[in-house]
Image (cartoon, rainbow, N blue to C red; front, side, top):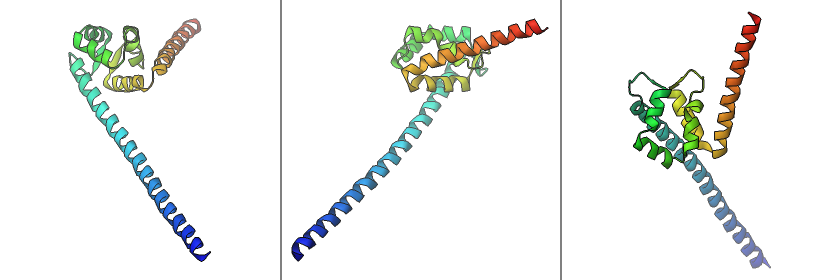
Length: 150
C-alpha cells in the first residue's frame, strides 16, 4: 500500500511539473505572438508611410482626389491593390473612406489609419463607407440648418 501511495504521489508530481511547463510555454508563446504582431504593425506603418511619400507627386504631404485617381490608374498601384485584396468596387470608394475629415485631401495620417483599418476585416469596409456617408449627411443637414437660421 505504501509503495502504491508513493507511486501515485510521484506520478502526480511529475504530472504537475509537466503541466506547469506547458502552461509556462503557452504564456511565453502568447507574449511572443503579441510582440510579433506589434512588430508587424510597426513595419506595416513604416511601409505605408513610404508608399504615401512615393504616391505624393508634389511632396506636399497630402493627396487630392485627382492625384489619387491618377495613381490608381497606374499599373503597379493596381497590382498592389489587387494583391492587398482590394477590388474595383472597393477602390471606387477608397478616397472617400481615406478622407476621414472630408477635406478633399488625404493626409499621411488619414492614409495610414484608413489602410490599416481597411485591412482589419472585410465587413469593416461597409462600416467605413456608412460612417463616411452618415458624416456627410450630418454636414449637409448642419449646412441646411445654418441656411434656415440666417
